[in-house]
Length: 158
Image (cartoon, rainbow, N blue to C red; front, side):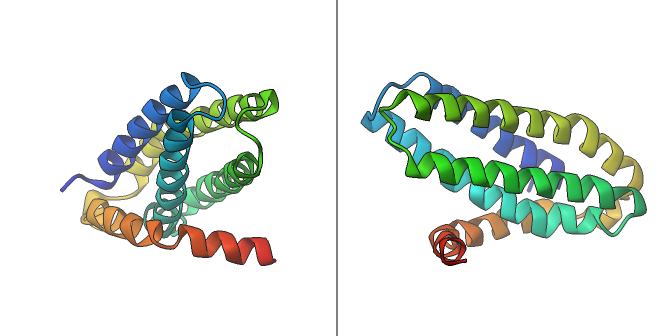
């Protein structure tokens, strides 16, 4: 079972590939719809699981509080962009422009996480404190995947 850093990085690599696939599609094609749907569910479940496992541990450390808050805030901004994209016509040029914004913001977020947050977390969180978190993250992600639609409905009602 991968450690938490490896599990999150593997997801990020998959997300990068999905972003590339989406960027290579055009209009309201089946390929774009399928790649977008996969990306949407993957990122939504990833972010929730990450917050509940990795960031919950990080926030227990003095240094980690600001890093966790910052990343969770970015998750919310990315979530808002994804919901906007969900409501837009994929064949319209504005969808692609909004997607480019999302891609830029998401790639910035994951680079920051992998290069800054992970580095600092490894310094302040002992391996013994975070052992098993990779498995917890993956399990939680699977649970969250089943909740994406329900959470979206709840959010739209607010």
